[in-house]
Image (cartoon, rainbow, N blue to C red; front, top):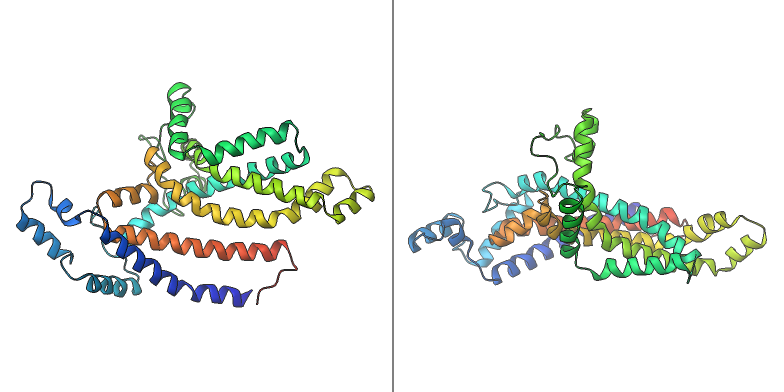
Length: 335
């Protein structure tokens, strides 16, 4: 396991290089002139050229990329053009909000999806199974922006159950920053009112974001449990008189969780992608909203910084999936 972790950490270097090169090329190929956007719509050509020179945008692309990689090696992501702050500083400000939203959505997907998938497998071709199939079909078919808008229309505008967006009410000040997660920080600082309010704002966007992963987790769990229930060791346990609940949970479900762990790791990456639309619709001040603003402004340093951080998260998540495999199944060994 130690060797596995060491190899994966060494792989971070080529991953960062490849992602940064690809993102740099693509961001400079798409139409858009960040210098003109910074100078303003009514700026003259001389002003645009001055802005382009001050940010080094008039240098050859290889020189720009070499300067970026050199700064990145020292932990400097550059300066965001549309915020005039360091990209690293921006990411430290916005990333906790996205992680809080994404982790909450994934917890909802796992907590709801695994029991529903198990229930569907146990009641195969009966009403619970049919209902979960409909839910799974909706989860993978409906566009996430449409679900977000309908959720706002029904649960905010019509019923008033949840707020329209944001992390807190405008009249409340954020809790003292410890982790960047408002729910955790409010509890640590003893602000129960902030915890309730932040949780109230978190539930609706997290539910919307969790719908897609929930459908996948539910279907994979159902397939895994169905396969495990047909195994010989399950039949043996039933023949020995083991209670049905213990057979399903301790024998079938435990062995069916390996593919589910893989799906959870991969779907967390989906959450980071889907968070762009959800954060934009719910005015959630996270990396997704920051990315949308950066793309609109053709902000190359910000776009590249976000892409590299997301790629690093993917690598770490894949490593955690492999570790989870070994914990769930002691027979698995990595060389």
